[in-house]
Amino acid sequence: MGVETKITGLSELRAQLQELPTKLAKRVLRPALEDAGEIIQQAIGVRAPRASGFLTTHIDFKVVVHNDLSASVQVGPDKAAFWAIFSELGTAPHEETSKNGKTWMHPGQPARPFMRPAFAESSDAALKSLADNILDGLKDVAK
Image 1 (cartoon, helix red, strand yellow):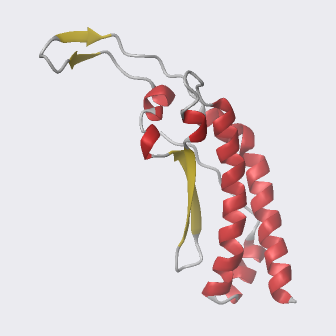
Image 2 (tube, rainbow, N blue to C red):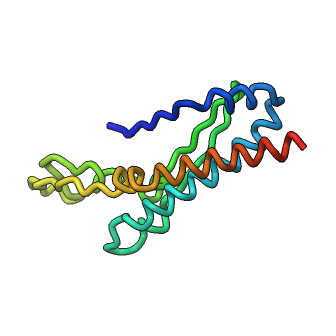
């Protein structure tokens, strides 16, 4: 299950990006995506469960720029906080076994989403930041 956002009406921007050499486009896209990723990262950190505070400081983002001028930013818990997905989506009842062989039924836990609502709340600001940064970068390149 995921959340998708579709941006339309940016054909002129895409045309300008395609005119740039790939290295130059990466210099424009990467910082723009980093700024957008930081906006979503902060929103997730604010909404993250705070039982120990660990999760609030382990939300990370990664920018990937491909050779075909497409790019993405992935935002979510880092490897140290892999268990955050269990909080986000919940777990079904299941059997657990201890190291000494004792088994019991775990009742599961209900979903307590924090990443999806944070994304929904911050996506407009992130998209605006992304578009503004790309346009500013293109203006700088055109000079």
